[in-house]
Amino acid sequence: MEDELTPVLGPLLALLRSRKVMVALITLIVNALIVLVPELEPVQAELLVVLTALGTALIAAIAYEDGQRG
Image (cartoon, rainbow, N blue to C red; front, side, top):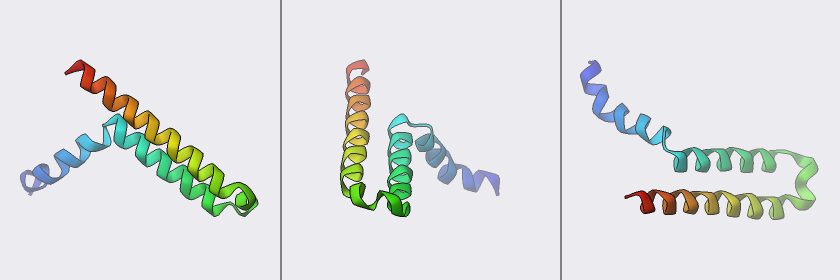
């Protein structure tokens, strides 16, 4: 049974160790928290745009760094 799960879980666990995936997940979680906090409603759209742009820029920088290594 364990050998059957390894081909599925192995790649998923490798993805979770990826810096790019971790940044994307953290950005998603923070954006979800911003949407859930009612006090942030006046600036909600701006915060979502800024944090998503920062996350995207960080992912692009990591991809560039990885590309320079290879």
